Image (cartoon, rainbow, N blue to C red; front, side, top):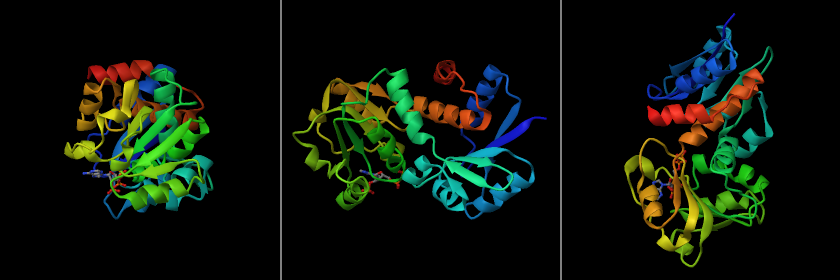
Length: 267
Ligand code: ATR
């Protein structure tokens, strides 16, 4: 019997997740199917219940349903609770269990694929929305020297930082003058609109890692970082790593990610 999984989102047609999970399944010999499923904006819960009724074993959740998924789950892992959002559902006989593998995916991409230690690093997160929320706790667990969140709207950065006692500092982009970092993560949605962020070049130290959580194109953030001498990364590795973590939760097998990242880059 083939075990069925899906990714639910809106829009969903361009999702790379079916390709990634098919590659993992082939590589590990796991007998699964994995499809992209469009849910109407007001039809997320109905879609999940439909999948459960059809015997699906689990699902990934993407934009804009990660918060709704969080509210729907009967059981939440600690990392889902910290993220306030769910990207992986596990359907058991009695429960819908929710996890969030995004933060773990980001950490694994930076630490394992780029070989850059987060411990003792000065780390900056740009943006204080949904994409940013999920990465603070996993980054703090790596014990950075300093973690700063900068956002256009200062109160949102302050609210985000206040969730982590005195471990995260908040400022505006202006407030980044006279600060520099080893790892800078763009978690704003500005890549979608090709908007440059008003951040000073001086935040990039030579050979620092500038990581954009978006993938698929060179964003203005990446271009600025490259010109300032940074090592630049897009979010494709994070995408594959968060999928690998979900695959591991479902199947108990950890697939190799490097060949899949390489395959997607070539495509
Ligand atoms: P997501 O789920 O993608 O994080 P979001 O929760 O709407 O989406 O958050 C978008 C983030 O990008 C926010 O930090 C937002 O800044 P504000 O909190 O000030 O709105 C940031 N963002 C979006 N457009 C921006 C722009 N043109 N300049 C700077 N920041 C921007």
